[in-house]
Image 1 (cartoon, rainbow, N blue to C red):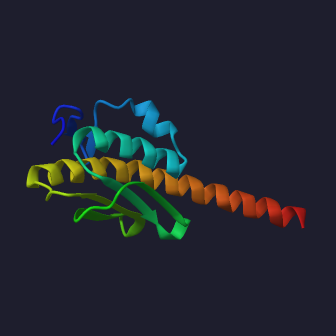
Image 2 (image 1 turned 90 degrees about the horizontal axis):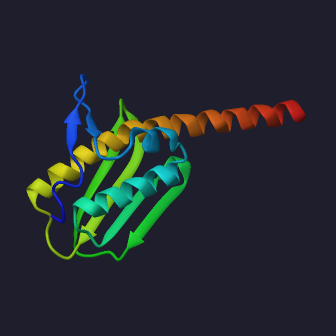
Image 3 (image 1 turned 180 degrees about the horizontal axis):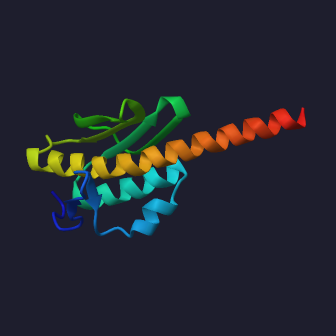
Length: 137
């Protein structure tokens, strides 16, 4: 593990992890999914050594990849109340330790809240754009 103090996690009243060292404004105002994932990728790189990072969201036709794929991987499918939020995969040459996976999972819990908001926002934009097209026709 690179730096166990880079991010401190706590739980709010609903038992959802919250990233404490990142400004809430940065995550809350970053609604484009690619920017949100980029912020998360940078954050997780500071706390867990890995050689590659990948985010895939099939419904939004989004794939973000950084690094080079290695043998050992952690893959997490993200969902919120049955809503698919995509999948994140980290790889590296050496196996991930249990305590590193716990940190990753907590960070993903915090990410899923913001990712759900970003996906909802994107969906609303898509609906508005479709409505605008229908009006113009």
